[in-house]
Structure formats: structure tokens, C-alpha cells
Image (tube, rainbow, N blue to C red; front, side, top):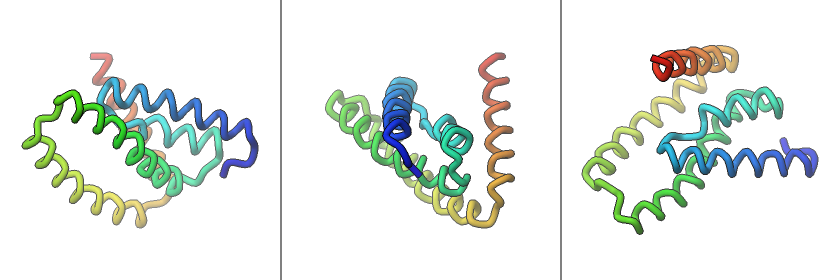
Length: 121
């Protein structure tokens, strides 16, 4: 995927921005990373989502460690939420292997539009 040094630098800068956004707002950066990988770097949607999930694991780990040190974790909520996410992730991966890349992009666009409307209201 990364063919030039400038692409690597671009991804590094994008990663820094997404790390700040995800840790600051408490949201994943996939909503932004996936379209960037697809449209700027021409990565197939299935690979873009996998890359996004993998990078989420890495930068989430850093955020989690910092929040644990600062004692910002509500452990029961974190544990029950994690169980739900674990189950949901299995379903999501299963479904993504059965849906076309074009349909994944359409679903992502619909979610982004709905989130944008909700934020505007």
C-alpha cells in the first residue's frame, strides 16, 4: 500500500491527528481513516476497514493506559461494554466478508450523513 516516503509521512500525520481526535473525543478514528484510505490511498474497502481496526487497537492501547493511570475508568461499564463489543466485532467481521466493498461505502456514507445531521441538530 505505502509506495513512497511521502505516502508514509502522510499516513503518519493522519495517524497523529486521528490519535488526538480519538483520545480527546473518545471516539474511534475509523469514520475518518477508512474514507482516507479508500479515496486518497486507493485501498480496497475490506482492507481499509481491517487496517482501521488494527490501528484502533494500537492507539486505543495508548489511550487506555493513560486513562488507567489517571483513574478515569468506570470498570463495570468498561467490562460490560467490552463484552458487547467483543460479540459485536465477531458479527461485524462475519457480515463484512459477505457484503461488497461498494455496499460498505454506501453504509459508511449513510452513517456519516446521519451523524452529521444529528450533530447539526
